[in-house]
Length: 369
Image (cartoon, rainbow, N blue to C red; front, side, top):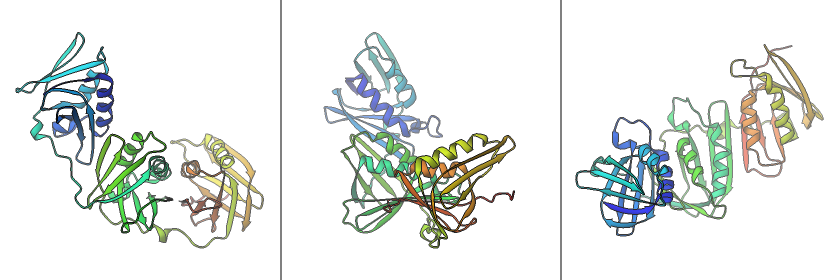
């Protein structure tokens, strides 16, 4: 293979494809990037860690067709240091690869392209499209609640439910639940699937166009995201996802209406005396027109209050400060409603005028004063 291409474009493509490539792998090929010529005017770059694959195509000048497999980190580091606007890559039949730009030259040994693992294909496709920024916001507003240590791997991802033009994203970790709802153009069969959190974290890094759409194809075991010039394919998580609908309480003894930012600021002030080593729940007292917030640790105590309208019973309840902040920071409304049903039932946070999001947080027992 012999090609000449833009150093900057190749570097950026290499870095993006390399997002899914592990620094250390049992199989050496998985630490590498596959570069193949496509016809006579482009190359295709692929990275794959057996769970997530990323592929893109780049226009170049092809002088000799072929393929090469190079260590991704080393190759990207070399490209970033090249002095000229263009780079020459010339690989011979002995898999010796010359990378040259200006007076700078490297010789690397390529692994066998024939032994590079093939990215999966999705035969039974169920396509839909969603605006890039909408999917980005939905992921950001749910992914924080994904479990990181659940023995059921299916809970380490975000569940998608698509039916009758409505898409829901759901994440749970045993202590909280995050639910986001939007409407899309979709007329196919009802589907549900679970995408690994790692995949979705990478998906949002490729989103940079507010007006563009992401084309999504869902297969039986894999999902494809086509974002601009990038093709991402990921395995889906298998297993039975928790029936989250039964976890959402229907009864409530009080409903609190409060300004989102005011509540965030108040919790942040009380959280100053809480650290990873000195953990303690934050106590909330929801009264008629006041929300009192306090925390007590070995470092001292904090007390604060803000305005808030409570309809129903006065409620004293404790929450993990980080869980409450994660949920409130994900709310995109100026005000939120908090539904309560006593000190031992979960709190449910929803928007005042719609059902675009729902956050459920389990309470923490607080010591009697």
